[in-house]
Length: 347
Image (cartoon, rainbow, N blue to C red; front, top):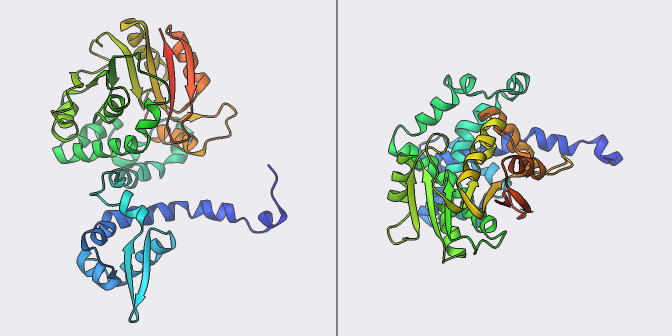
């Protein structure tokens, strides 16, 4: 890669990278303090002092935060009678307010409270080749995820963040291929049922079963899937420990990237054994390019898998090798242009 003389004399790209965590933490803090929610609820622009008073913060600190959010184009500011008044941008209103159906608020909270802390130990993770939950939180990754399920509210927050991803990408991945020939579908680790809903919307003749842990399904029934959605069914179980029923198609969305090679082979072997002849498996993952030159989001996600899990992100050819190893064939790959892509293979 060649750089211009100007780029080498003033490394703006590197300076932007250095500021990257300052940018993200500024947005995280504004969400955590409730800035965007307050401005949405109040419906009229507010002064810095009014926002600080309502959110119980220092006036000076809030003024600096609001100014930075304006610079990041997350807030708008207009002067009226010598006073600066702040309001949400459309982007913030749609994605940063809790009440929005497309909110990223819960994902942002997880990034701020979990991923940010784990990434503080990225150097250690690279040296040791293992996740950093114990350094970051004093407990193992399994214990931390159990802690996420300690209360209904904590579990709901975690499921909300999982749901927000598919609000943006779900339709794209389930329509990347024509799945209309699959009428009996199992979504392994289906969590909130967001993928199941997208499947039913695209293929109304299908029936989708969400396979997940009992407490996850209890929350899905209570908060995410209505009784009117009769084409969505539920099956309780741990897909590593419990039997997986026979079906036409198995969806594994953001599942394999959590696990090391041997566990991926174990799960895919189990799926292949119960998959109906002519049936298939749909993997939904962030794919690395074969030349390893991108996309940067998938590359960063792979580092995130290192600090948080036992898995990693893969190229399409690496997933193909996994699928072929356990007996799947006729592999096809579709890139959606968004974070997550789709791989379809048949038995």
